[in-house]
Image 1: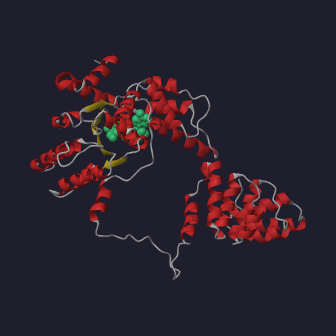
Image 2: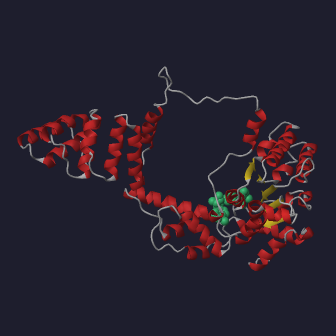
Image 3: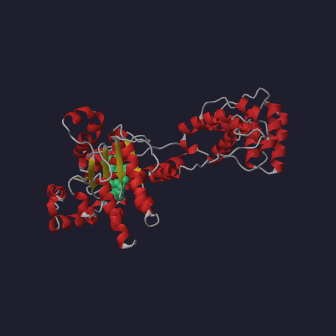
Length: 455
Ligand SMILES: Nc1ncnc2c1ncn2[C@@H]1O[C@H](COP(=O)(O)OP(=O)(O)OP(=O)(O)O)[C@@H](O)[C@H]1O
Ligand SMILES: [Mg+2]
């Protein structure tokens, strides 16, 4: 570490350097002292005098010399000095490029540095580079321009866009661990009919209808629905139920109708209602009449009361199936109800693998062993384990100044911090399954409990 030098020390060392101008280590000591003392810009003149060829030996020397140049406003020289390829040198080079108003090159170099050593990430520098990038967007008068939002009279369309959740990053079945049985069902019921409509038409098999996914929180219902969207070529509408509900009385119905209409116009399409219990389950907050009116309208739309729903598949998800109006389950509506169970051991191992993929991990990680100790963990719990271990690795990296990967020991430590969240749900579900299992609707839950000896 460089020591902070006072002005007299700097002065006497400068004299010493005058006496032995070839003393390279002395020059570097001085430069470092000046940087630490907050007078780095003074180093620039010194450097030019004693190192006119700008040839600095180590990467660290290049960094220090270049810092002196940057402080003196000599970015061009800094760039010349930074020849090494190490990430620390690259960061300085990026700074110099930013100073020289070459944002594109700066960003390239900066990214390369952070890829090589993520602990060097510097949001301030990044923002500075980006500010320069966007400053290039200027209008004819030379003022920076802002995006203008142009609205038109077609409010229904823009509103619809808002009601249908924005598209997220594409997810496919490969991103969903376990749940093979359900994936097959979805393949058969949703993807295949949309991919090969002719054969279904030949046999007069109607394509469409409803599938309801239910199960404990965090076990992949929403993820599975999004993956379904990624797998099939159908239009996928993700409906923001809360926004539909937050409307004035009467408005909700109009909006719901507009959503179904849009889906029918764009067939083949999948309409996804996440947390569907919100539609009928908020009676305590709304006037009773309003909520039940919304439910009946929803059911009417599902029945294709207004128009034919051929080619529209309705996918619903909930973790409180018992608060869903039984009318939802009648034939032609959500006539297929699928249980999304907590992941079994194999599934847990593959979920851990999925979440570890793309993060820096040490060799010798055994997710099979980790999976064994995580009975009752949901996919979301397992993600939290990985993220907690990631936090530990980040801490270790910052302490070491270089990237240290996630290790088995970190994952084990994280396991102790995260508690399984599916057990409570299973207890509740067991009671419904035992005492309110009309039409065998919870048979799958019972089978699961039996298989896992929790009956
Ligand atoms: N089977 C799985 N494979 C991979 N990741 C999973 C899996 N299940 C859950 N996860 C992780 O947990 C997160 C939460 O899962 P998701 O939102 O799908 O749960 P959910 O079943 O919809 O829960 P809720 O009932 O609370 O809405 C996912 O985004 C994913 O990162
Ligand atoms: Mg969900």
